[in-house]
Image 1 (cartoon, rainbow, N blue to C red):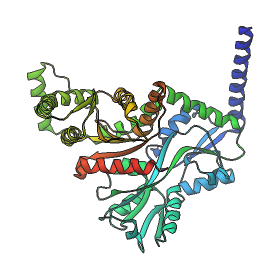
Image 2 (image 1 turned 120 degrees about the vertical axis):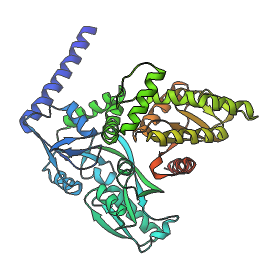
Image 3 (image 1 turned 180 degrees about the horizontal axis):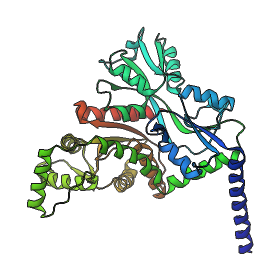
Image 4 (image 1 turned 45 degrees about the vertical axis):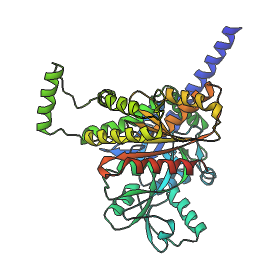
Amino acid sequence: MKNVENNALKSVILATLVSFIFCIQTFGLKIGYYDNFPLCYEENGEPKGLFIDILKKTFDVKSEKIEFVFGEFNGLLEELRMGKIDILTVVADTQERRNIYKFNEEPVLTNWGVLVTNVPFKDIQELNGKKVAVNRGDIYYNEFKKLMNSFGIEVYFDEFDTYYDVLSNVNDGKYNFGVVSRLSYLVNSEKVPNVRQTSYVFSPVLLKFAFKKDIDYIFVQEIDRTIRNLKSNGEIEKLFNSYFLMKENKKFEVPGYLWIIIIVFLIASLGVVYLSHKISMKKLKREYERKIEGFREGIVKSSNENVVLNDKIYSKTFGIILSEKYSELAKRENRLLSVLVVKVENLEEKNRNIFENVLNNVIREGDFAFKYSENEYVIILFSYAAFVLESFRRILREKLLNSGFDIQFSLGFKVYNSEENRNIEKVILDALFEASKNSAF
């Protein structure tokens, strides 16, 4: 009986695969993409990015029946509506768009809108009568416009083709304010040093693939199957992070005098000379942990406060001190730090040990956390990727459920960039504020 069932299942899978290949070979596919690094972009005339990687693992993109079409986002949306293209990468899934397009079910990641500026900014009312640069056809532009109307704030919008155009114009001082996606600001922040992200974040959305309404559903199913597989084995996070590693390696150049210092140090201490520009983050974290171990022990011994609450979870006082030490190292190493805040809803004291044990297991070696308040925990990660938010949310949720602990929590995520000369405590406060705002969604 079992063999019959297995054979039947194999037959269904084979029939689906044959049908899938037949659809591509018979009808072909036109896939739209645009400039939105690292999710999709063009390099030397070739499509690149995380969403393109997913398509490459789903289809034979070298097939003559598959054509990639590069363009401006708003124009591609219109082509998708008219059926001139079959699939469009990186589209926010909203009810309004579902009336026009078909979406796959499995989101690739979450994104949200942010207000950026190049001037001191405290209150949203300061936007009244001002010009704001926006991305034409962007979901965050539309949502921000609705938000301003609800507050009775009169804002004049100037539209541009890409997020980078918006950021460049704000950076050059042509506009004092702009609306972009959270991810576009993070990946371009080094190129626009005069631009800062404000505390105003809004409209969290799921980023997916959009399809023309009458597309064969088998294409949607195959893309969803690929995304689920990549998530389950952790490959989607590795693919995403690889774009930041590529960017970092291209930018990093070690001065000649620093090579001499490194060589002398390695010969004297290790007796081995093997230089590489790909120094692993784990090695850097281990070196730093050894450097601060004596400092940590001194603080613990001299303090009456219970400094270590769990293996990698500290008290607020010591956590702030340790954060400053990590920020000093990040500045010396020209690295970014991830600041993640977990805000737990209604955490009862009897469940605190369970939650802290789970959180402790989620935190990787070299990273640490501290309890900021009774229901807020700050995590400092000596590595950076914008994808860390969704990855951390998924892992923490799974481990809590496996521990029989079903509790609601929200996350706040900010980046400490030493080039901006910001105090890390300010970044922590920004992340706390973002976690509080996200808890309202």
